[in-house]
Image 1 (cartoon, rainbow, N blue to C red):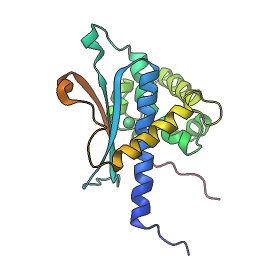
Image 2: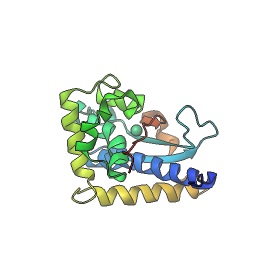
Image 3: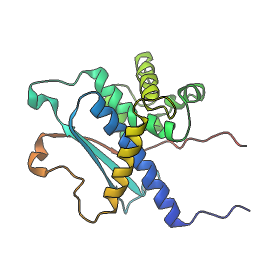
Image 4: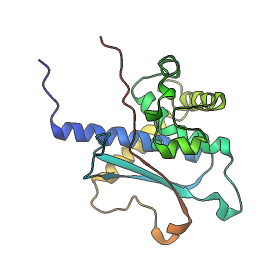
Length: 195
Ligand SMILES: [Zn+2]
């Protein structure tokens, strides 16, 4: 009989998974040129329907401050990056996810992530699949140019979550000008075939 996991280990695993997810948004956010991108992890007393013990949040300076606008395509790259990072971490490839219709499930991403993609939840466009494939290639464990950055960012987030202070959070002076992006809670579990 398999021993059930101890609660402390479940919480640690959940924090690590949340860190990987947020690190995906952050790493791709920087890659597409978002300014002052940051994320942090928060322990939650309300695990919700998805049994999440840790939630991650990410934000960046709204490009409108510089008189700019974030092109839809770039925003979509950032939006899918959390879920793609989850997949890459679990060695679940783009082809696996495509074959399993992973992205046709609204639980593949949080509502805010779907919103950033400009698609209805569970209803990705052909363009979005291209975007997803691009992010998979950037975050690929073997060949992805941004895989090392993803790992170091996720480690930084975990370290930061151990601090009692909230130094991870960007200065609140600019609070109103930050575009708060995600409080990703919903996440589909990646079920791998038995055996
Ligand atoms: Zn997310």
